[in-house]
Image (tube, rainbow, N blue to C red):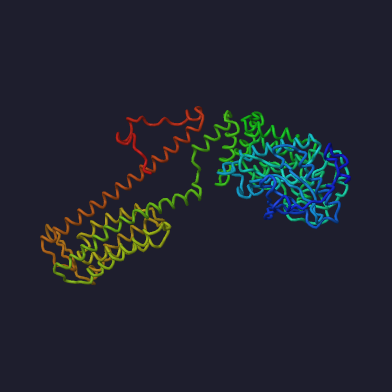
Length: 616
């Protein structure tokens, strides 16, 4: 009999090995390997006698190592004796004709908690498949199973996410009882008192420290005698990982030093917004002093109480006050990060204690009082929205330039004095349309040189128009419209650049005429102003038609631009106040009462606007 078995209760203290060898293939049809461990492998199999799928754990080439064989059978009997829904049932055990031990257990369908946590890869409480609440519910089942084992005098000694299986139909199982010991049996830890080398992260150290670094309790890491509270430490580490998505301690051998040096593990030190009840519970479960740790049942009951809605009101008030102080300290600085910190801390305080007037007032102050400077991230987001809107507007801006191109082509039907201004106007109008089309295909930065190119092309087009008609005929009509349009565009160029470009459109032709480079197109005579187009010989009827067409087109264009600008401004302002109203509803009535009274619906700037729907 193996010395570990001397204290096993009831059937667990029976003979270590079966008395006769059997051929495992005679009853079980072995399938593929579905798992490997330090002492063997687990294979999918079919029980030919009962015709059901089972899992067979086999220990290969170990007949000469009686200590490991005894431990192998001891695992099977410990697991088989713990008749609990969360412990995998053992159906059979024996030794095959080659001397290799095996035992047969229920075939599980599910996913290990380690794989689930890797899939979540964060503390996402609302993961679509594995929300935090579901994992906490399963942890309650696991904790009660461990409590059941403790009442039978069995300590698992290797609790970790990889040894917890979550079934497809709500089940939870505790796996791998190979390191389990009976509390009263000191012989099972006699071989362990030092660390002899590093091990792969997350794997059990066999032959040195029994357990997995990063999940074993400090007393277990020191090789001391352990009891049920060592398992509670492992459960606390699992709880920590469920809450944060991050292991409580480093993986591998480095975890030993961290385990021995740590006082407790608090999830809130790594991830914000951890429920204080679970934060405190996790700290107690992972306390270095095992006297502070709860039992596995107390751990399960505390988690269940949280799931049922029980809250530690006093503790939440204390934490809320702490967050308020942090927010107030952050407000002493004026930088963006400090204000963001203040917002987060005030929000946490309000969430923890909705009755706190201090948290209410601080949150109202932060939400309703704009910062002295607009944060860079907010400006960048606003610029991106402006650029997106401008991209849409530029598609319509091509239409007037297409009209200008067609109008200049029609001028060729009139008597022409000088063709070069007309040809240059056609080329510039076409180039402007091409530039607008290129920019409208994608969102372009408001500082892009594309916009500067469009301004230059427009200026040259106006200059060409001045040489066609003269600087005082037709061109001033378009100049006023384009000046207003370009100044309304939210590009990041100084307005003086745009104004200067428009002035040059008339100034250059006038200077050209004054210095004699081109013929004069205007003169002042008694009682009249004489305008003579430079490139065309316009008869009176054609002149009247061109003037009417220019005024109508510019009137239409200016009206459209102005209305779009007005609607955009009103929509933006409405959105600001709609958002402000929604935010105010989150605040207590005492905070809202300090705000200025809104206008009555009848006092609105326009009766039709009192119920205007925001543009999506």
